[in-house]
Length: 372
Ligand SMILES: Cc1cc2nc3c(=O)[nH]c(=O)nc-3n(C[C@H](O)[C@H](O)[C@H](O)COP(=O)(O)O)c2cc1C
Image 1 (cartoon, rainbow, N blue to C red):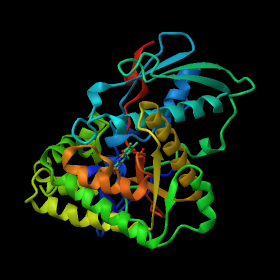
Image 2 (cartoon, helix red, strand yellow):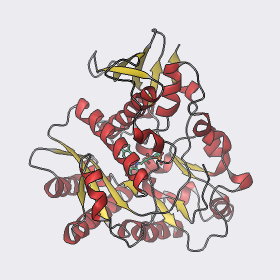
Image 3 (tube, rainbow, N blue to C red):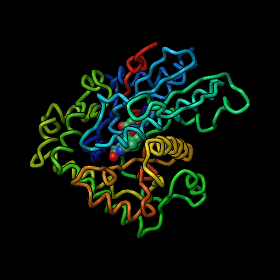
Image 4 (cartoon, rainbow, N blue to C red):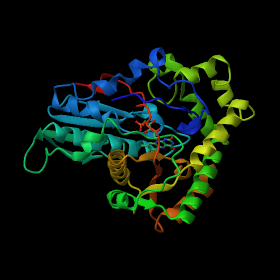
């Protein structure tokens, strides 16, 4: 896999901002956080079937890259998956709905990787209720039902959440049927314009609400050594960004201060990115149970692998779906616009043609195993 040169920088709210003319790629030579990216190179190297599948599952998309998964391998052929509650996002995700969706993405990747290795996985969700494991996964050799490799698995190493402005190109009609089985795809210009405005207003609300903004700032990792030390959260790395840090333009203090030049610049650049969006994808569920959230995550992962296979970029923009009181107006608007009455919008993402981006940091698998 090549690591592409990129001209953007990650900034507020898990997003990115455009750096007009950046001399050099973001992860070049000595500024590459190699330790934090090592799990991408290690995927598939384990020989034990569960660990092999899990080495791929830890590459799943998840909110704020918190990687809230913990596994217990102490029982033979079994993965007991837990949500690591020390990774909760109490301000932007007060009911852990998004974190549960991220765990659904993890489950789907684990099942796909197991199948690719010739194993079937039987799943039982929340067998002990909300406070027990999220899922118990039982691995067995192939069999007639499972253990079949999925063609989408080929995209696992290419999948990204593409936090970049997209090209001014519409999605070819021929691609829509491939996506429409997994999500509602919105391409109609008036609807797209309305969703764009929604995502922008909701993003402004998140960053202008001190407690939600602070949650993101606390999770920002400034530069290679912070990213390697804590390979989660919002990674701000690479030669260009680190030069801004040295110049004092990009700092934890500036990102938390709405009056700072860095914060104001971030708003302009983020707007540019959100506006550069030709289409959206949404995943809705009739109810909003934990299992609905897991299933929404499984679908999102498949959607993201499908976009990768088509050369399309996908970027979750979740602000309008967040359940903190200051967001209520946008939450209601999102649901009126995007879901049937009483249904829940679980995921909303920008869809289009974007540039190649680097893989995001990951904690190594061994740090996510609690027993076994
Ligand atoms: C439920 C969920 C919500 C997310 N919401 C956002 C979001 O609002 N903004 C954003 O930039 N990324 C969002 N993401 C993407 C994560 O930031 C991304 O998955 C993580 O940083 C890892 O990067 P990767 O997907 O490229 O591997 C979300 C992902 C999930 C699963």
